[in-house]
Image (cartoon, rainbow, N blue to C red; front, side):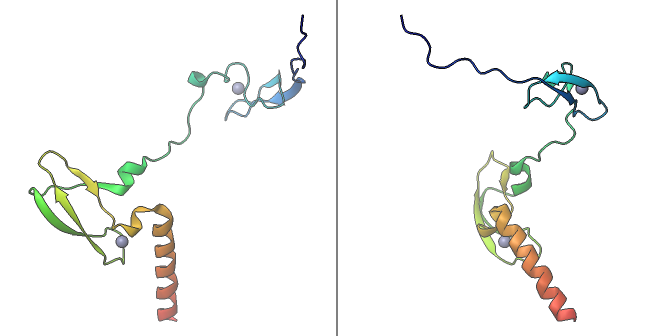
Length: 122
Ligand SMILES: [Zn+2]
Ligand SMILES: [Zn+2]
C-alpha cells in the first residue's frame, strides 16, 4: 500500500472583518477569505459597478441604405475616414477608424491633442 506523499493543507483560521460595504461583521475565516458567511454566496452581495460592454462603446447603429459608405472617425479631432459595406439586415458597425478601435490608441490620441492645444494657447 502506498501512502499519500503530502498531507492535506490546513488553513489557519484568523479573525477577520467582512469587507462587504455596510457589513462589519467579525468572523473566523481562512487567510484568503474576504466576506462573512452570509456574504460569501454571490447572490447576497450587491454589485456596486458594472463593467461597460466594449462592443457598445466601439460600435454604433447606422441607418443607411445598403452598399458601400465612407464614414468619418467618431473620435474628436481625428479626420481619418474608413469604408463600410452595409448589408440589408445588419445595423451595428464600428464607429472609429481602424487605428482608434484600440482603447489605448484612443487615449494616447486624446492626450496628444490636449498637449497640442495647450501649447497653442500659451
Ligand atoms: Zn458580511
Ligand atoms: Zn480615428
